[in-house]
Amino acid sequence: MHYFLTTLLLTLALCLQSVPTATAQRVRPDAKLTVGQKAPDFNLKGVDGKQYTLASFAGKDILVFIFTANHCPTAQAYEGRMEQLHADYSNKGVQVIAVSPNDPLAIRLDELGWTDIGDHYEEMQYRAEQRGWEFPYLYDGDTQAMSRKYDPVSTPHAYVFDKSRTLRFVGRIDDNEDPAKVKSHDTRNAIEALLAGKEPPVTSTKTFGCSIKWSDKRSSVQATFDKWAKEPVTIKTIDETGIKALVANDTRKLRLINMWATWCGPCVTEFPDLIEINRMYRKRPFEMITISADEPDQQAAALEFLQEQQASTINYIFNSDDKYAMIEALDPEWPGPLPYTILVEPGGNVLYRHLGEVDPMELKQVIVDWVGRFYHSPRGRGYK
Image 1 (cartoon, one colour):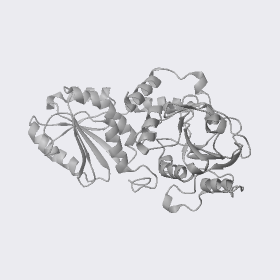
Image 2 (tube, one colour):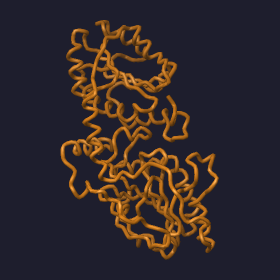
Image 3 (cartoon, helix red, strand yellow):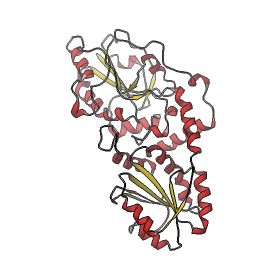
Image 4 (cartoon, helix red, strand yellow):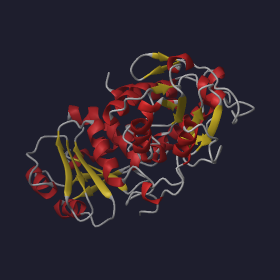
């Protein structure tokens, strides 16, 4: 099943049913795991389909658990450094193990503005394949049983255990999300010290990153959907000149323009994906505009459809029955059939064109690669 279809189905399930009491309770323990304590056991499924416990790594001298998350911008910024730790130490008796602690149903769509995928198991498989990970990536999202024992506070959060499985270091991988500004390689330093039979120079640090999405946050997901359902939905008319101005894009935002019609089956089918994309990225330098190709006298029908879709986007309907003028105004490369979607950079460069139903995965990748995956990326925090 398509990864994002899985995400959609699970999200819909959340909307249609109440959260079980057992998973709605706060899952963090009363006391966190501290340096000097033994590694709690676990039984988790990896992205390779295998089950892993502490015994699975009995032949390794050092275990490095890194709690991480697909969706988190800080975690994404550290993926390369996780890979480098594995590459540098896998042949020295060190095992790097990534763990996803998040309940994927406790993550709001507007928390996915820095990513193309969420934290479902299937999405973890995609990320591991995309990155070529050769180390285990374990899923703890259903019960968060391991995470309750280890108690990470953010992603990423590293735990280094020695041969006796005693915790010797816990904290950050290093001291800056931007690799060019790193001054203290804390996790690497701990590994090097243990390999040399020494005490790590630092045994614990604070961490910076995204909060863990414990299961009790599911209620905020539903509350957000309820809030979005109340947003006003409007539609205005637009002419050729107006469409050309949209494409010229004199903003500093990446602009998605979708041409659709109520009578167009593929348009109707893809629309929920577009609404999801808008909700993911609209807090970033991104905006979505829809233009209905229905006849001008069908404006009320077009508005009704948009309201059903909760399309609180910028919505227009072309004010003429001259469809060829509409086509040329939007994009001379558009052959004419619906739906048609373009991404326009500031200044009018068309970054992406797609005739027919969009592939949500492909479209999200293009968007997030432009707006930036990391806080320190050019279009990251503070870009307006």
